[in-house]
Length: 171
Image (cartoon, rainbow, N blue to C red; front, side, top):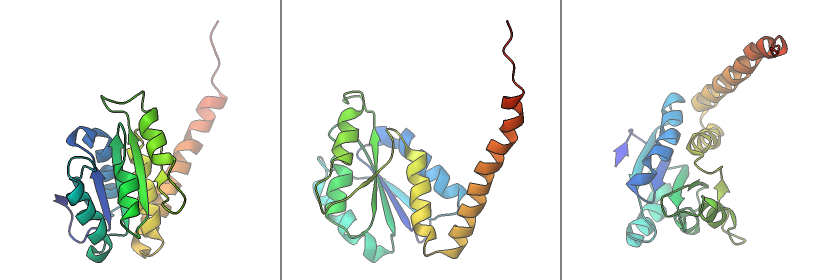
């Protein structure tokens, strides 16, 4: 398990093929100095591992679980059913997916009582940002990192305004 000491976010995925999307979450967490761990936990192929991981996460100090899955995408919902922690689902357009819609709907349409926050298809980066925002509610240092991150987003847009307003289409 890739682990930074004392992780606050657990990033899990159904298979290693999900890594390109889920490493986006890891990258933004690293940028924001949010300690995380990352591993593979398959709801269908290693259900005992999924139950163990989800049930023990809160006791290990984890504050948020980011769960990515493609195809039938049961990992986020099943994880949410086993923990009191917030779970962020990342639907992944996988090789056996129906244009990603099966994954989106599997994660998005959870039954009452078992919510999963769901980001866009292949939205690993936003999942990492949302996880950091959740952690920031109780971690002042991470809250300050989020303020800096948000200010940088604003500055990027502000810097682009003049270029867009002065753009002229050539005939």
